[in-house]
Image (cartoon, rainbow, N blue to C red; front, side):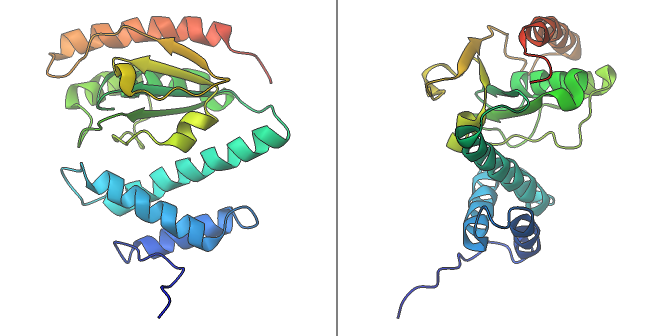
Length: 214
């Protein structure tokens, strides 16, 4: 008996999220492709999650980001242009890359599409990092560690690495930067505030280098 072309979702609640994403990408990706990607996103997040209460919601967000990245790659190949996309990558996606992504998104608003990921993601963002970002006024509604995936790297115009070394994949036709920023893991809040402020200075320079109104 032939296997069904519809992937088995690891949590039945994912079906509603998959249906919503399938509608958003109708005509671009098939419902089966969307279901496979949301199932894969759930499994990747579940592998490292400390608390699974909101895992279905986070899997939908993660899948939405990955689908948007895939759509961007297709559109860019066909027509080019669009807002700059910046990806921050560190080892655990629990400290430096989260700080940098939230600060850039806060300062750039709708002018830049920002994402972050980890080569070996942790189960949760460092609470002192969350505190430092809250103090800066950055939005925290989507701050959670997530693994690095090929489509998000391929969609990025600028990839900024922070300590992941050879684990960070290299793709042609991207601008790569490496920011030697100390790892905030286990550091007191005063040190994390210093790291946050140092990253903010780098982001000022990055914003000055980005094309305006592309």
